[in-house]
Image (cartoon, rainbow, N blue to C red; front, side, top):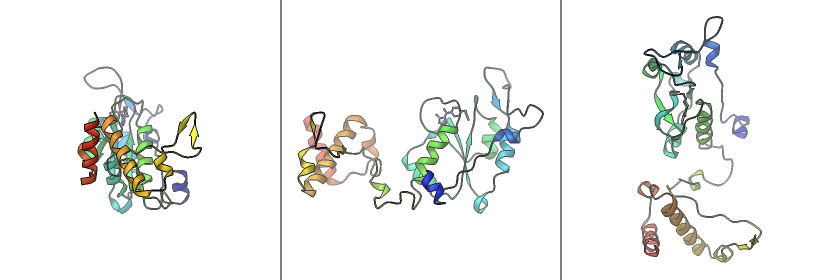
Length: 222
Ligand code: 4GX
C-alpha cells in the first residue's frame, strides 16, 4: 500500500465526519427513535462529510461498510478496482440513520460475519484488496491472477530453502526439474486443499477437464 501511494497509483484521503458536526459538543450520534440500546449516527454530519468530497468525473461509488452488507470477496474487489474513486463510509455505534443509506449509499459491503467496533478496519481491508489489483501496483513480473482465488482454488503448498527443516523434507517432485510433473503436482495439491478445506469454492471455481479428472481421483481416495 505504502509503495502504491508513493508511486501515485493510489491516493487515500481521510475525511473525519466529526469535522462536519455542529454545536459546542460536535456530536455525531444520538439516541434511536423508538428507544433501545446504543446510539445511531446522525444523518447531518455524514451527509455534509460526503458532500465535501470532490468527485472524480462527477460520479463515484459510495460504499457503506456494515455487517448488513453483501460479503466482500475477490470478485467484488476486481469489480471495485475498475472505479477511479471510491468513497468508503465507516460508521460507529449501531450504525447510520437509514436516510443516509437511502440518499447517499450506492452499495453496502461486509468484510465478514463478525462485529467490529467501527467500519475503519473493514475499509482498510477493502482498500488493500482493491489497490493491489490496480495496474502497476504489484510492480513485478508475476500476474495477480496467479494468486489465491485467481481461478477460485486455494494455493498449493510453497517451499523454499533449506531442503530439510525440522526433519521435514521438501517434496522431491519440486527438486526434480520436471516442470510438467511439478505443474500437475501443484494442481493436485490445490484441488486437494480446496476439496478438504473449502469445498464450497469448487462450485464457482473455473475447472478444466484435467482438473475434473484429478478431482475424480481425489474423491476416490476418500
Ligand atoms: N464488515 N462493523 C460498522 C457500525 C455500522 C452498523 C451498521 C453502518 C451500519 C463491519 C463488518 C462491522 C461494525 C462496521 C458496525 N455502520 N463492517 N459498524 N463486519 O462489523 O464491515
